[in-house]
Amino acid sequence: MFKIEKKPCKGLFAYEWVVAAYLLLTFIVIFFCYTKLPNAQAMIWGRLRLIVTTAAMILVYRLIPCRFTRLARAALQLAFLSLWYPDTYEINRIFPNLDHLFAQWEQQIFGCHPALLFSQEMPWSWFSELMDLGYVSYFPMIVTVVIFYFFFRYEEFHRTVFIILGAFFIYYVIFIFLPVTGPQYYYGAIGIDQVAQGVFPNVHDYFNHSMERMTSPGYANGIFYQMVEDAHNAGERPTAAFPSSHVGITTVLMFLAWHSKSKRLFFILLPFFILMFFATVYIQAHYAIDAIAGLITGALLYWGLVQGIKRSKM
Image (tube, rainbow, N blue to C red; front, side, top):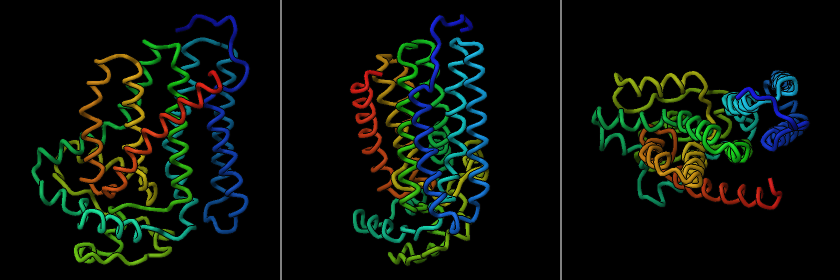
């Protein structure tokens, strides 16, 4: 862990170039939309702080180049994801909301709204807790895969972090330019009665001024239910519904687990992956089409990022 490397990396790692590209893109968007963004100045200063923190961590690695400081560099960028997620709302809130279109498509495809009916048809406390357990397993699954590769497949550790961060930031770009909030926000904005009747009005710029959401359905006294609600209260925003990045990223994680050739890792994660897929709809974080799109895009992103690695011989 602390053995000094003979040939330390002098520049950015591949996954840090991904972060740099996202920084540049969002800086450009902020510049052109500066007068429309309510918190443009705070967003700029926030980015500068992230740059300084990243530079400080790179300096630490240059002073003590070893596996531990490599892990710290990766962990820092993964931790920053919790800041980048709500940041997508600060940009996409200036664009017209599209939930009415996605709600209509959901109704046309399924003849109903699964996110509305799922918890009503299966209201049992044990089932609710199972769904919430699946949803809160999101970050533990990411940590598990990253740590596994670090300790047991170190030669592919940076490749793994690149794939995970690459997938995240591609989703974040989609979320910026595709403002869909999901059922927990849209249902509350238009009223459950209208959803039940299949009426989905356009709320226009409603979410530019309101972040009010409905509480999750299910067993309110459950431990995992409270964990989901606490997470939502801490950092949730009316953003990032389509496609479901929870499903998409966990799909990427399952491909990484399979690639690791560790059956134990794959089958440990598999039940949580299945629960995650259904949980996103059960707790009304996503429409069913969001979850399905997450599954498809997750597979496509993994394949595309792997092909990019092969071409660049990373």
